[in-house]
Length: 91
Image (cartoon, helix red, strand yellow):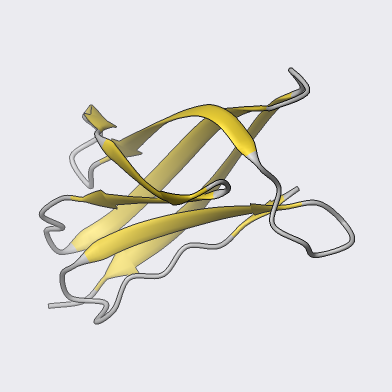
């Protein structure tokens, strides 16, 4: 599984996660949760909004610095998935 993270522009905005198996078709997800670790090291839950069966977005304020986003999900078949990505937010 891969998770794509996009922050556009890199100074503020949204982050999104799409779940794709190796064949690159979107993986339907039964449930998902996400957290963000702030530049200060605090971990916060991100309320996810489902766009379609394997695509979620979370709206949050992103301050300058290094962030880590973690995603835990379960496929419709019950397979647990987890991933993370790092993003540095510029001033």
